[in-house]
Length: 186
Image (tube, rainbow, N blue to C red; front, side, top):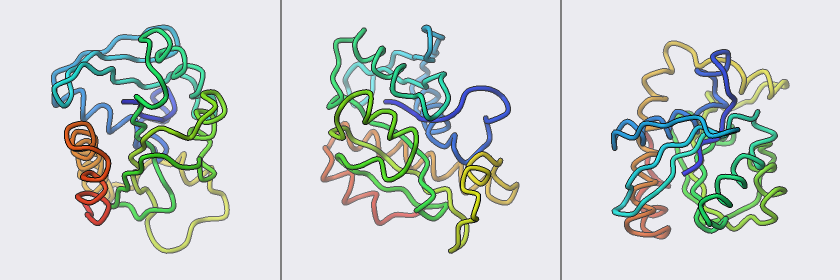
């Protein structure tokens, strides 16, 4: 389970770190403690009855592919083993979407994964981070901004829902997770 985000305290509460937040929720739920392994934070866990690695690449978002590829190689995994948790400005703040595969959709973290791994064939759970109908002109500034105080509870609920979706995906498969979570809001 890979959460995408940016390392460091400056970015901890930003929209772009929703993936990191969801991995933190998963780790807390199963009592997994992580450690830094080179260019990634990794926690070993059991999810859905199977061993899993919870991963937060410690490279910036647009360079996430390298750390993820390394962790996969060290664990003899393949891109098909991945579930990527990622922020999505196309989705409203309290919405998530589960996908079996897909394009990067302009998201630099997903683009890095696709380019490095050479495939779009990995599952993802997209966490909505947009508030309101219109996006600002400076999208980078928007996703690198902290969530507003009145958004924090909604974000916490959404990353919890994303964690639930990951468990459903692992235990019941992609179709069940998409049916159960794609229409739900936090």
